[in-house]
Image (cartoon, rainbow, N blue to C red; front, side, top):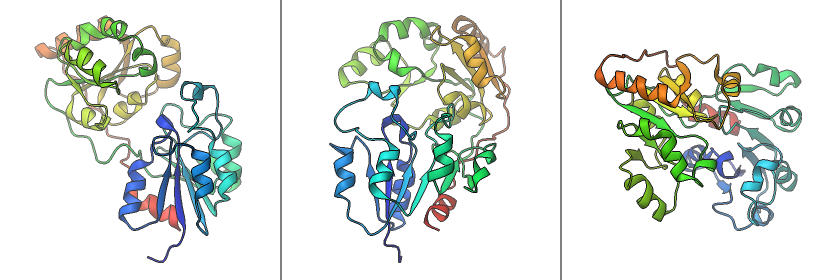
Length: 310
C-alpha cells in the first residue's frame, strides 16, 4: 500500500465512536493513531508529538468543548476537535456523528460546511449540509454490523439511558425499574467499578449484560426493547424494526421525548408501571409485539475507507 498519510482518529469518551473503523483500517494496513483520553495523558501534547508528512483527521466529536464536558474535565482532555485540526493542518478532515439522538448541534453546522472535507452520516435526510459543496454520505451506523433478526421468543431487553444520573443513585434506579427488571428483562448495564457491580447488579439478581457488549447484541436477541431517556437506543432499536418502549422515569418530560422520537416507527412512550403490565401480558402470551422493517443500515466499512482515503 502506497499511502504515507497518518490517519488521526480523535474524540472524547462518549463522543468517540470510531474505534471499530480505526481497527478496520489498521487491519487493512493504513497508518492510524487514536488520540483519545483513554490512551493519552495529554491530548494536546500527543498531537504535537506526531511527526508525519500529511494527516487525515477523523472525528466523531462536536466541534467545540461546551458545558457537557464539565463532567469529564481533566488534564488529558484539554482541547476540542477544532483546536486539534489547527495543530495538525490536515490535508483532509472527516466528520461522523457519535450518537443518533443529536446528530449535530446547531453551532456545529457552519463548521461542518466550512472546514470538513467529507461528512459521513448514519442516516439519510442531511443533504442540506452539502449546500456549500461538501458531500454527505450515508454509510450506516457504526455500532451496527449486521441486519437484525426476529429475536428470541419471550425475551425482552432494557438499554439503560441517563447513566450519568443513575450511576450516582443506584438505589433510585433500582426502585424506578424494579417492576420491569424482576420479570427477567436483560439490562444493558453501564460501566461500574468492580465493587458496585458485585454489590448491585448481582446482589439484586438483575439479568444484565456487560457494558462492553454491543447494544445490537441485545436488540437482535430480544422481541421487545425497553429504553428510558434520550439515549440513542431508542433510534437504534426502533429503526431496526424492534418493538420499542420508552419508559417515563421522570428525568425527561413526555413532551421532550416526543419532540425527539414521536415520528419513529415501532416506538411507544409509556409510564414504567404501564410497561411493566404490558410485559406481564407479553410473558403470558397475551401480547404479541409487532415487528417492523429494519431501516437502519449496518456500517459500510469498505465504503467508509474508500471515501476517507480517496
